[in-house]
Amino acid sequence: MSIFTNRPALRWAVPVAATAVVIGGGAAVGTFAAAAEPPLPARSAAQLLVDLQTARLDGLSGTVVQRADLGLPAVVGLAGQVGQGGTELTSLLAGTHTLRVWYAGPERQRIALMGTLGETDVIHNGKDVWTWNSQRNEATHRTMTGKDGAADRHAVPDGLPATPQQAAERALAAVNPTTEVTVGRSARIAGRDAYELVLGPRDKTSLVGQVRIAIDAKEHVPLRFEVYAKGTDQPAYEMAFTQVDFSRPDAAQFAFNPPPGAKVTESDAVEAKESAPTAAQRQQAEAAAKQARPTTVGTGWTTVLVAHLPKDGTLTGDKAGKADKAGATAGADKGDIGQLTGLLDKLPKVSGAWGSGHLFSSKLVTALLTDDGRVLVGAVAPERLYEVAQANK
Image 1 (cartoon, rainbow, N blue to C red):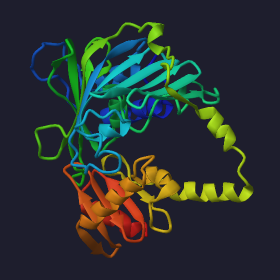
Image 2 (tube, one colour; image 1 turned 135 degrees about the vertical axis):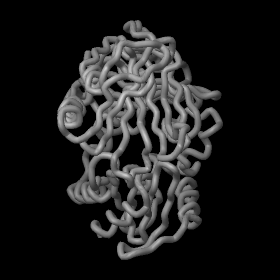
Image 3 (tube, rainbow, N blue to C red; image 1 turned 90 degrees about the horizontal axis):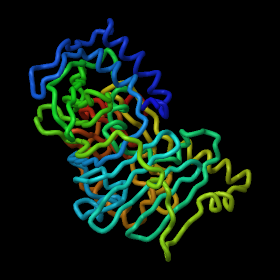
């Protein structure tokens, strides 16, 4: 099964973008791997891109260590998780974390975020999807409808990558004429030989210096993914296998039975109970969803995400959950929102022809929160956000 099967947009984007880059899109493509240990047969960047596109993965299990140092504040659900062995999936935004992953085709996947106090599992087995939090002793079950097949959006969490493969697929979507593609040094990762593909933005307004993807020399699956901020020699974000096995996991790995005393929620029952809104409620929900839905401006490395806060300018109660797509964490409670409001008050005040607001900046992420309720985020310099804010008033 191709690693691109469950992401049809990427399956098309990669060969088209790679063709533009390698054959005449203007990107500089490295021809030979640099001399390094272990010695591997030379492969060009174009060949490595093809390797990634055509890789067929029938099975995989392993341990992934992920580290993020993006300079993000520990608020909105992160404060109680980062650095304390948290098992909330949102905690992947900062700190160091260990995940266990299993893959046995499009019908069976499992991800476990390990913590010192427990673990959080997402298990997809056929039509059944379980989310299990051992620390809370709570499980949520959903039966897939089959409308979207194996790519049902509830199968696995899609907000944050859980493996180098998922992270690499997202990065490869940025491969276009604005990207310089080269071959780096070979490496030994999780006991396996790997090539390194290096992506770099040509646009100087991007805060990203390089993205490095280590690719298994035999299976052509990403083993390590690193993002470097401009002007730094240490990754701001990295994810790598420390142990990997490409044999197909046993079916027992995907069978889940809630332990005695666990609180079990049937997601389908909750949705059925809430599935008969009035016409006015439907219109209100559609309007709220349209308002909360973020848009993107630009392409490639300098893409800016633009979203809007609720019209009343607050993030409380139910609106906090809807604001997830505008940058707040899903399920944030009033305490989290209070922390967020306090943080915003401490951010530098900025203004210009676009209006006024507060600016958050780190070595890899910049966010502009305008006083008129807009949120602009990107891996770009502040001037790029001001430009987009002015053009999208």
